[in-house]
Amino acid sequence: MDVRKCFVSCLALCLGCSLTATAQNVVSVKSQNFCGMEAAMARLSPEQRKAMLDSAIRPLAPAAEILLYLHFPPAGGTLIRPGNANSTGFISPIVPGNRICPASSLTQAQKDRVVEQVNEDFSPFNIRVTIDYQEFLNYPFAQKLIHIITTTPQVIGQGSGTGGVAPFIGIGTLMPSNPSFSFATALGDDPFYVANVVSHEVGHTLGLAHQSLYNDSCSLLTEYHPNIGTGPLSFSIIMGDATDPGISNWYSQECSHPTYGTPLHDFEVISSQVVLKADEFPEVPGSTPLAPAVTLPVSGILGQAGDADVIRVELPADGTLLVTTDNIDVEVSTFETDGTPIATFNDPELPIVFFPVTAGPKDVRIRAASNANMDAQFMTGSYTLQERLVPTAASVSVSGLVASYGGAPIYGAVLKLTGPAGIVGIARSNPFGYFHIENVPSGGNYVIETRHKLYQFQPVLIDVGDEISGLNIVSNATELTQR
Image (tube, rainbow, N blue to C red; front, side):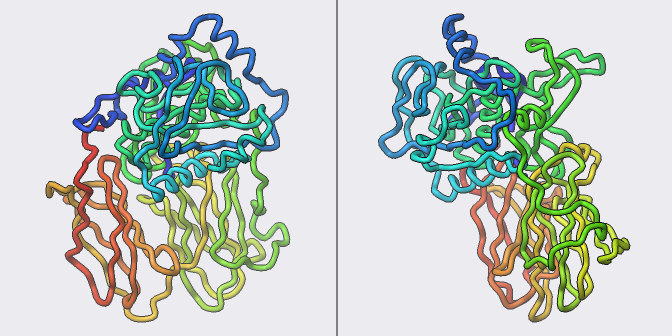
């Protein structure tokens, strides 16, 4: 989903992401100038812009694959030199003079989370994400992108408050091997926000401008389209102000941006640069002979608007399955293998569906569902179908309070309870900070992961022997409340 993003037609590099900083110099992702693209491009001379344009690409046909290299500088830092991009990925037209990009303070687990979320954002497309520099170095120049995750914008000569920056020369224009940047320290070293900015800035090098907000007459209201709705099913636009930990995805609208004179259709632009991943499952239950029942868990991708996946399962006894996803409000329907409908399920509050399945072969159809915040056509991404952990003993409940380090209750935190066999339950804290997860098999160890856009949490390990009713989930001491 999770994930994830921020901005509108970037004149060539996320507008000097000007964001209000906290005492720890944490960028406020609610500021209008979160992306430094426009500011960075405005500083270039006409000759520099022409040189960038000469090295850019408008492909006649989409590439079979694009490699996206995420570079986390080592302890000694990485030297970035000014000039036109070359195959090393470490020359940038928007960097004034030789600059050292220091290593960020992200832990390995946080780096892994960034890579995972960026992978999810680009999952419909045949864009392969790597952290192997040698692989990047050996890849064809015209089919590779690079993004550098460093500390603060000042290290590459950008203005304070900038969350990310990238070169951008026009809608639909690919900027191969031109580095884009995100600034982890300025983003509070929060992997959620860092990943959002990574995807946004990489979007610029793929030829995407900012998604703006317009009125009914297509007059520009704000540079970045704001988030839509609240809670786990809120919708954040990757190339807009994607700052909410709900669903984040690519977007499309017909109003033409006043700077670029054309509408921006994110999905169409990216798919003109690189092909979509192959669809691995049929779309219609019962109409096409399916392969033997899959072994669970199994993952798939809803790769474009209107896509549906039909997966045959066969349980030895009645049970419960679940579908989890980051970026889709998912609808699940079950069918007999001849296509006869059985039931349809959708969680009105969460991007996850628990549903019963009787013994024997059944077809399970997975597709996106429209909701009050967004139409299903804008929800693409990966999902996992798995079997819910079956109680070996009595089922109990786990409940408690989500609070800040200072003791204030936190509303809207999303808690995921995971055991050895997978996800057991998901809950959202209410306006008083309380949460409740039912049907937890007793007699096991579980991990609770908690996420909120303004707070960071460490995973909590719990031993469930009996009902738990007073569990306190407390945020880290450093709260990102100024975002």
